[in-house]
Image (cartoon, rainbow, N blue to C red; front, side, top):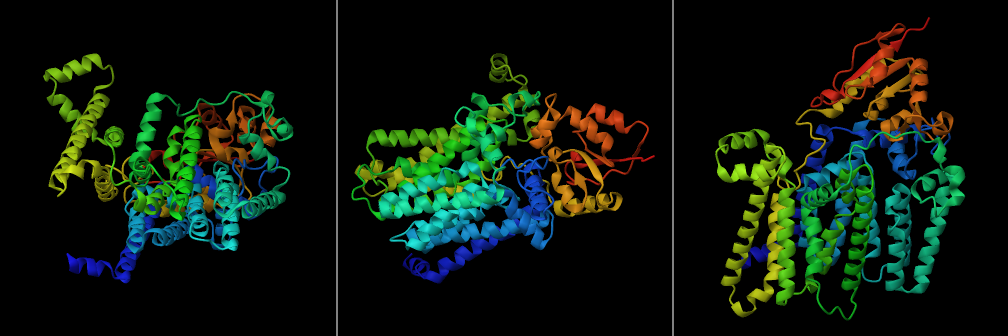
Length: 616
């Protein structure tokens, strides 16, 4: 044992372990970049960014593309494509670079606060979690925010940070806000921390710098950037933004949302979030449950822990509130990647001062929270239970009395009932097994009198170690694997489909588009797509004032019928075509061309039907 400790104490051994974690992250990221499907948001960030960077449109211009976020989220990937070429491959390769940059920043922070092995552990926590790598590899906003957050913390957290680093951290926080408005909480929280840690003078300087940077970043887009703020801020509090807000009378009837929030979906998606980001979020939860009763004096370590806790809690609650009050309840699974690693940093910073002994009531609270966590995470796996296995078991239990009683009293589909019952029983078994292991550990400790009071930290260590090993599996980080496309090469499929469209659609052609795979237009240079159509149903209404909607980059049924008759080519993605569209393109004056090959080999809906208007 002493020999092992001697080897582990050698710095370069920990460095090699961290490097190996980084290489595993990179290998997984390149595989994910090649095999995961694209979706609407990724295509919009890339294609709108490309249009802005190449000067086809300006952010927030009238009758342009809908700039429904603050501009940097589009401009950053846009200019990367301008410099290195448009396409999914460019966007995702850039995101891999940013993901490795995030890992480096977290490694620096963990090494500063916990030492070499904590630093290696935090790299491996990222490298072993498929959801983390996936979200950071797709060309979406979470992968842009994560390195900004990590390096802001590198600059601000530490003993007596230089003033220039403090101010640079403030600038990064403002850039973060200009990338996604839901990170607007970060700059004020950071300024309050600076005041608390470095005093009023430095805090006021930081606040003024942040305000100045925010103003400067708005100037190139003024005044139309107020459209974004008018969209996000409550109308009752901002009547002065009325000129940049779509009048209520101009709206028509919006399509029904795909998702709605209710108590079951809220419970399910909170459980899913803890399942997918288990190590990070449970690390934070464990720190709060083991927080010492007395934290005086306020050391640098305690201040950093409080700052990370406030930042994590505020962002988590804000993103949950937004997701659960919108039409995208499941988006919380993506949003959490903006900040979940704060939990990893929190346990690194706080571990040394966590309570080693707990009174009985705190042990009860901690184990109740752990049991509820295991139960809810286990319940969230029910959709991953193999349907063939479930149906086979249902057939065998046809004469099993308890099963028939359950079916009688619980009126849901048998397949759903079996899946949920199965994972509930497994969850209860896991809780019992975990409790048994802790009991055995407590019995084997030399001082049994204090073993019970000290079991809290042991339980947290055991839970996190088990979760780290299970992160790459379907039980945790690989579960609910949206965007999975097996081992198919999605990047190559998009290029093949794009090359086909480019071969039949001349530059400057007008395109009527009804679909959600907007990334395909990165491969068809020079074409004109009616801008509001890029956001599909999210900017579409039935009825309403067509001109006002179009000026604000929205569209309605009247514009759709006008554009389909003006367009040179009509592109209709499978599953999303409408009967009236098919009726028009099936009539005289239109020629059907070959459809594209599948953009994503695993999805039949990824085929685009192509129609050409025959000019007289």
